[in-house]
Amino acid sequence: MGHDSLPARTLPAAGRRLQDDDKGYDMVASRSARERKAAVEGGPLARVKIDVDEAKQFVYKISCAECTAKAHRKWSTYRTGGDNGYLLAMDRWIFHLVEKHPGAEAPCLAYLGAAQQRLHERREQQGS
Image (cartoon, rainbow, N blue to C red; front, side):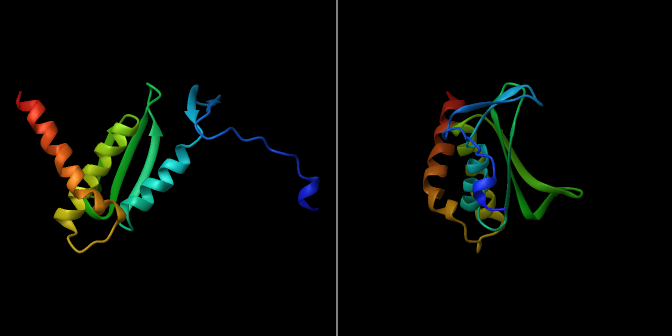
């Protein structure tokens, strides 16, 4: 049986919203692509999962393959939101890598300076 006999599947364009009837919320078609990109950016120690919360926002979860935080639970960060949630989660992951795995290599470490600047700006806003 060749490919010609298979029914054609129509996929939505990137960024187009789909209805997930099982869970009752819209999903962005690029969710899995975002997850793969974040995993690559995070490097070999990162375990990335992107869920959708009740408010239909992405929830970015990045955990460490080596570190534990409490008892047997893996160290992780959990941030909600679109691109801002991604940046916050990745910033926290970058700081974890720098502090706990100083010799680790990951593409996201190229953004250490920007992550430090965003942290500095957030602290200044909180102090105001």
